[in-house]
Image (cartoon, rainbow, N blue to C red):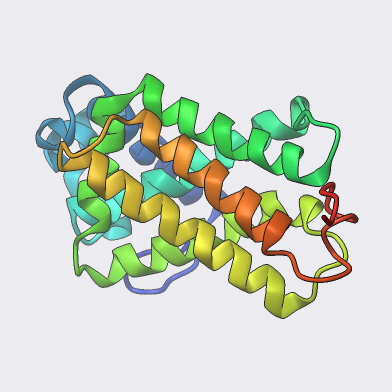
Length: 211
């Protein structure tokens, strides 16, 4: 059963969930072609072959819709990882591979990335809900490489990585750094958190030697 709901909180039927999926995919396509300004709710409705009222039944605003697109994009990354697992000799290297794949996916679609970043800065309540879903997805992707750490440590690491991702995306979107900075900073954060920052007794288990 779908975990998604309409704006009024009504759970979606399988058919409604399929319509919602088409709407999100339409927004991703429009955002990828023309960025934030190209995503108009009426155009989304036309491309998804649904009524405009249907779009607003599932999404309060364009920002809400685009934030849901981030969750869909992350789900697609999860599916690719399931088909082609992360590479690396250590848990840290495999986590870095995951982060690098995510960053490269954004680099390939800069207009969409910029649209998603702009949407995330909105105070729309629906955006906060979608952002929480994305954080949960990031945690699911990171968990296999955080084995042996406490729940508190896992939450902390995921939180820091999420903040690094968000902040570097904002810096890029404001024209202050190239988009490749996102992957570089995520890798730096992961190595610090799980290497020298892992604490006594953990560094070797995470693939780093203590010296």
